[in-house]
Length: 134
Image (cartoon, rainbow, N blue to C red; front, top):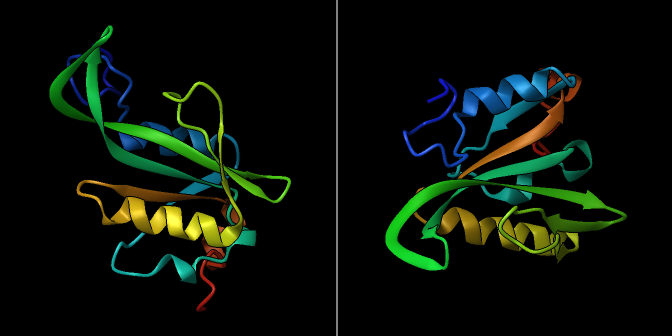
């Protein structure tokens, strides 16, 4: 087992520290989102992307097991449209506009065991300009 995995299954649920370190090598920071705050206070133009850690059904081949595990998904804006880049999807799924993104994030954060990271350039993190309520 590699030390950056959370569990013995080696199923890709990497420890958040690995994700944060990888982002830092590219000049980005991951900001933990406080779920008590509304996502309406995120300054979307200053956020490069989003990483969510969500519960996911466990599968073994075609079999769906009665267990859940955590799964990382990415969300990114391309050409004015936000996309769900979940590796379990056959292709990126269009979420839509900024308003639709906020609705998507609110829905995800209402679920049990969901966490949100904002991916921002280092300078944005230092000055906290990812917040629209500064």
